[in-house]
Image (cartoon, rainbow, N blue to C red):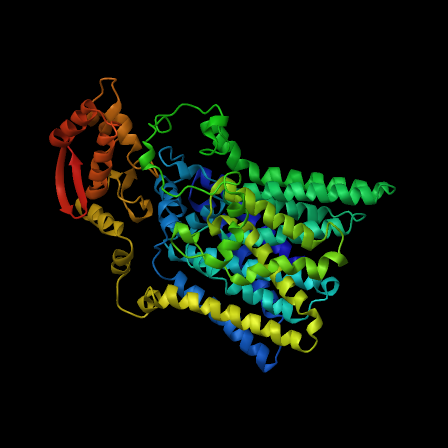
Length: 609
């Protein structure tokens, strides 16, 4: 319980940065950020102690601790000290806090749709940017993996007796978390997914704890559960979906337990009060992000499901719909059109996952997760319908299929339940070896060695194959490291050299790595040309030059090949008419003055009137 309380306090202290940052990123914000860091470090320290406890002084266990815990954590720290190249981190996880810092407080960024996502962890990133230590943002995010592993070990330890698990189950849980490739990749960069892994494990622990003791007044557990679900919803929209599934299962479980105690008013009342406290704490902690969006856009989950809400008008939201040829090529598998393929997706992810490719689900977990299907064999007959195994399986698959249908087939989108799946996999492996007597520990040891080796293979490919670790021990500059891995860093360097500090640059098809720039930038987000296309097609009599000047745009940076291919496609499909093209070409010839061309990029200034 101490670890759960510490983890919750860490998240709540992070939420306190919201009102401070809304006013200013000055001294009050830094003081609260220091408080959060202290609280978070205590929680991480407690988790470190928890995940080290199962490894006693025996030589074999010391070796497991060395290779399964210490080495992966050391490599994770080293990888976190390399320059950030992760796409999403540069597009919005670091980019939006950087814009807040430039403005001196949290601001609306109306041209960047993703800036409306819940951004609780980005408040932590803002603190590191304020202190001019951006690399620590990666280590900060990676620390949540320690939190997740410690909480997972605590859940398994609490269930060892009823599930008849061997002591090695706790070791296996820790090793599985610290050697899962996706967790290591996410933990080496400033993403926002690892807190969801930790909070998902905490939610399962607390739901089963409350339901297992219906007569007790579990007010503290209910408060913690509501806090973790609210914090999940504050991390990203997937966290909101997870919170909805968890609350639904909690309510159903409470209903079943209340029926079992229908003759005992105390039990029913205790369950009802726990449910109401959980919902109240969840709404209190999660609501700020969604109320802000509703106030600014008329849609609490903007930019999702826009057709269901009466959104407020904005020149940055009323953009033209691009031709179908410009849409992403990967179409999601639908439950109704291909039910078997859809239902098999979680298992395909466990076996065929690959990094940085949509066909490989953009992530590698572990094939050992398949053993979660064996978890009912060990514990279902020993538990009620509201025990951790049935609740965990329903939580895992219920969330998985909803996320796949709503978000698409990306392993990272399943983060809130991947920790739950890992625990169930450990239970499944321990369960099917229950009758092997002395050979049981040998089989579990083999599974642990397999998982450690699987993680090391990933780390080799990710760190040494990408020359990340060699960078730390070389004289190579951070800019040189970036330029070899992120093409847009060349353009960001040119912008710094060739434009004044008060310049504002429109980025056209450049890649949208906004965090790389030390000048103010703008476009229309994922589809960088939508805002420009709206201005081109405008017939109000305002010239393109005047549009640029009204926005304060002084320069334009273009990826020439992408721009030329896109505009040629728009012409062929008659999305851009001859009049549109004439308007654009007139602007190019009369209002743009090239500064420098460094293929594939062109940087030009917008001429003053």
